[in-house]
Image (cartoon, rainbow, N blue to C red; front, side):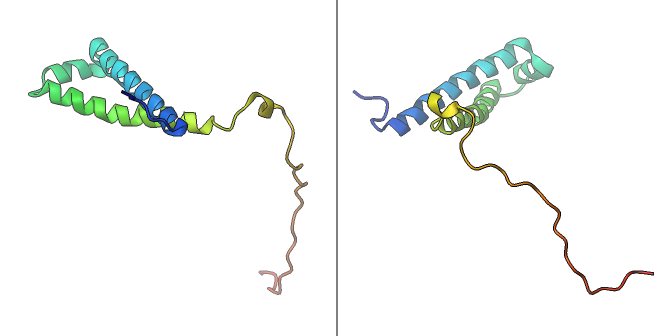
Length: 107
């Protein structure tokens, strides 16, 4: 049974999404365990602490998975031989552009 997709790009995205979900789980556990800014106490005193934890986890999964997948996609073009300085065209020297005006000088 194949769990990950066969397509390399989809596999890259899936692995990074799972990594983001794992980091989100660690982050939620750390927030609750350390009671950062009182969030552990607030969740503990809630009427539905499991629901609050699940909502927090899902929101952070979206955030951390998106960051992980976006970073992976942006790094696709980076190869060691591409990291040498140079390449491209040199930037032109900036010079002021003068425009003629038919307006009279203010008094």
